[in-house]
Image: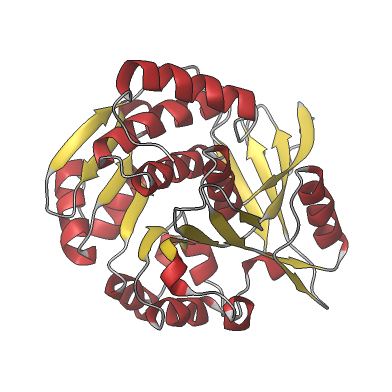
Length: 320
């Protein structure tokens, strides 16, 4: 799935899944043998990579989203929903179905995921055989894909095509990546985007500034740590630390907030913004997402947030 965007700007490659999210709203998580009536159940496209790619499309920036789709029932539903957005599967995988993510959303807005993985989490370097890496500026990678058996093949492709800056979001299952994968990730020197709990686990520290410093030293690049309502902590590649204030909001649904934040950071960096400015807008965009029952912003909501923020904070920032 491609978005041409600005013809003079290099393309960002988004590696990762497009997933069917079954969003089930419940008063609380059920306990063993409990019977619960749901408040609602809806279906939508999701997946970390899809959500990030969608943010970059809203910014009208050039991307290529390499996201495989199977030919089973869930694959057909995925293709149908993509077509409704004017998109098409980038890769079709015969003989496999897509998986599905059951998203349980409590009244507090917190979410719990139960996932079945399918074709959407796989990777084959042949899918990128015609891609010229010299035309890329960034490569986005999510840790969930790297956990899969084909994760090492994805890392190997990145290593054998140096040049583009890797932007890595480990995700909530980062503890399931083995040492071999972590070593390969570190050798990419990625920009790192993760939440506070993930940063504490990965760094072995329990204080935000110390965690950021450890991760910057380990990965040799900038680190962005999201902190919910408190905003985000940023450590530049040179080691400069700052905390960017969050935006107060009523939390309705936290699905997609981290992906929205990562996508906005990536969009800002792609346009040449300072990291602090990208993080400031990302905080506002993520706050808008969590205040809505949807895991994403529609175009009108996005433009409203972007225009309002730029009028106050971003008049001098470059744009695509």
